[in-house]
Image (cartoon, rainbow, N blue to C red):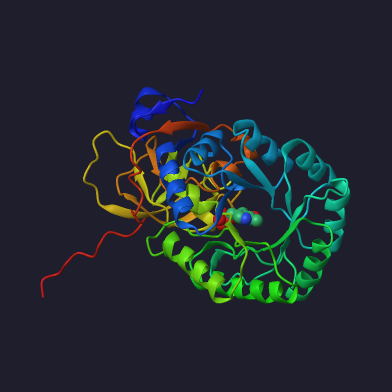
Length: 389
Ligand SMILES: *Cc1c(COP(=O)(O)O)cnc(C)c1O
């Protein structure tokens, strides 16, 4: 049973832990889910890889998410275990035949993605030539507007997509197109461009029943990111503008869960402006390296002292030099060994990416019920001191 606390400080005061703690805020997750479900002009599928913690899955369900973008049979089983009424869609373009067969037979999965003719044949064969498949072709699109581009691995060209859609039409009950503009995409026009490509393919292929605009919607790490609503508006306008008449869905990961958790990590050594933590790139904090030093953070103290902020570099506990999270991370100048940092906006790609490398496998999960102090708080330098003219 996961224990619940009033705040991260309350957790640390009653529980002596030496391991990092992921502090899940279910109320925040429910609110984020409600907002995105209400704003998107179609169905919202949660991309399970972003955070598959049962507390997170249940909170999203409570917030109205009913469909899940799963990429492995283990994700399908996990969602169905905790949310038996959930609908799973197998949105990974390369699957094992055994996974396809089990998903179809035991978990009611009908929607599958492919980007190659051999994968289409595999899905058809592994489902026993089922007559109720919903088959989606993954189209490759540019990754320009994204902090983490996802190009070069999945997706086919527009010409290939036209041919694959026609082939799918011959065997499927419904067909669709899908794409992913890249993660932490801060450019709504990236969706408009991808929808224009999809509309062209759909027209040449004789129409589609579904358009899946993928994930990539940004979390508000710096505060400069456009809102989910502005993306939804651009998507609605683009779909309308191209005269696409089909069912719409999206697959957010990060945008649904980023605000829903923080991570507690202890300072094991301070060397000048370098802090060595018990958590890092191989633990819960990989995104501090890949997204950059944009995460709000504070030192957990009973009585905050009025210390000036200084820029720090952070290091994780393993012996690998990759395990570094270069700053500037702004923290009180008097932070010391033994103190705990709380890093906010850590609901996405945190515990999901943990490894046990170098023996640092222990990490805990707790529920924390205070409002998230870190939403709308940038990890930014202190404002410049006003000088008299
Ligand atoms: C990872 C992934 C997502 C979620 O991406 P976010 O950037 O977290 O929104 C959605 N769809 C697919 C196919 C993915 O691989």
